[in-house]
Length: 369
Image 1 (tube, rainbow, N blue to C red):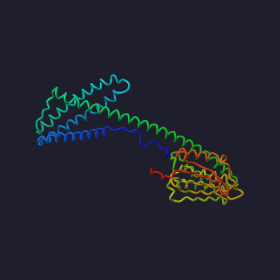
Image 2: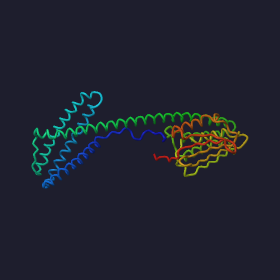
Image 3: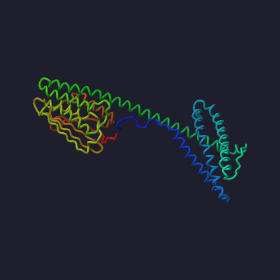
Image 4: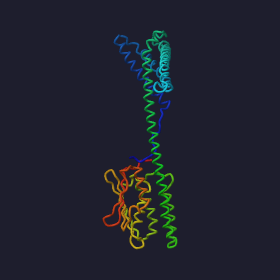
């Protein structure tokens, strides 16, 4: 499951310029094909000296038909031949097809008179007669039916595509709303635990409390800006963790020992924002009593195939999964919202005592903005 984001491709409509260019290219191609067919027929009959006139005739007919295509498309959309009202719409389409046929024959004949006879390319029989209209009508009805069919297929495909995009956008917005709610839930939790630590230091070590408040401000500015994305790089998360550990060193002093093993080639990989700080916070909370012994936490990051595995291990009596509180539940919910149920957090006892939290994520490089 890819990371949720608003669909990049909105419901796209073809612009008028794109539509006109496409019709012109199509008409040119059809006109040239008709010219080749007509000219080769004349070559076999020994009449190959009037190729320019034949070319003008075929292109003029194709271009006039192209000019009438918007009218046919408009009629198809205004009077759907299927669905409600089809009994009235079908006869009206037949009438429109007849009108378009008459208009095409008339404009084509007038255009050929101007382009062929007046330019000296030769003489042709371009008089408008009932016989000419009748001979051209079958092909014009076929062309009209083809245009109607293509219009219906394109409109149906576009409507289905738009529904898919709207559904994807709605799902993405719901997912982002869920992530925002989880993030807003985490921020006050972090603030509460940190301010409790500050309150402990106010009387015992006022200078350390003052420094912690300053570093807390920097951390909040860095990690909880309102317009942050829901993902960041591992390297960025490690920098955020350093800010948090700077505050914890003021509290634990020499008793705090945190070892971070994260190879540099993994730093560009994508991870959920505000991932490591709650994990380390839980590890510190579940370690040995800070007034009596060393508080040790080890963070290890490794790539395993297509996955990224993060281990946070503490040394101490530990605590139950339920007592680890909202932090782990929040992270699990965010990971599964972002990447699916194949990823998440597992908690187990470490071999040498304490507990180890394992986070499994997809191994993916963050896309450039």
